[in-house]
Length: 465
Image (cartoon, rainbow, N blue to C red):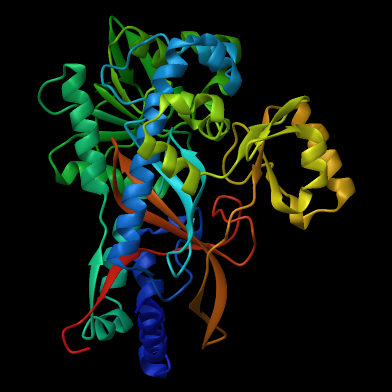
């Protein structure tokens, strides 16, 4: 059914008037809604990602089980310094673990980055963004825009389409954390990240969404914070409306800034930063907390796939890990296991270059990723040498998903093959909503400088089909 639905959608674009009107509405709609990543429009294709209900349920089930296993693993990491050493936390990151955030989840909201094939036969996880997942608001507003496109309006006469909004889940997660923290009433929220980022437009979308739900929120940077007499204050901020106020008292920090970048920016003084002091004193609720770092390190997939740790998980969680999480190991000299066999890790990594990927343990946006089957043996050896010096993982190649997507090129519709990922958002332990990214190259990441996003809809046959 899914392949037929995609073919039917593409057939609509054979009508030049529909195609032109759809492209113009998409282009203008993104401009009006500030749906940009930096200066680039988020969506450069004319079709959303379609999933069947069965595929979405597969995502919900598989991701839900693995995230439950990650929560158990986070508990074990907190309790065992020897186990924790395997994820290569820095001394400053270790120090930030001491404070209980006031709510139970190590990552109150997160995102699992996966490849789900068109036929639903393969679902493979490649990364877990447990610290600061982006694109929730982007996807919601893109869905609203796509729903109104001429081609989608025509398509919806024959198929039933269901969007997958998630902003309300993020807000509910923030408010639930606030209540468990002991807060009352509506918190005053600071959306916190660096100035001048390409994701700033999403911060604005969230700020407006919070305001529409009666919650005051500002956008500010760590440089804009002060901590006085037990109160965290934003001394410079972006408000929803012009204001003469020079200070904004903060109750809850919606933390988009990455812990690693915060620590790197302030160096030895980082642990005395106003944000860190307010958090350590319990003066603010912060989502996600610094403990999210336990699960955000890419080495977490090493621990998930280590047979010696499987007793931490339920049989159902182990089955999900086996089905969906690729074999992963921290790069180091010595022996490990692969599919039950004892191997020398570096010898294995050199011999199996064409089915392995190297990734830094704590980077994002595709930085430092080396794809074995796209490198020469000499390049791979140099990358392995670098991976021995900087904490890194080696991960087995997964089945990559591809689909055909239409785009307007030189005033004509061109349908081309794209890599497609499916990245469900997780709130607590439940999946709601999904990011989809497209690319014509193997490294599938918008931050890395290419590709497109597109919203996700469930698609079902209409009554007349």
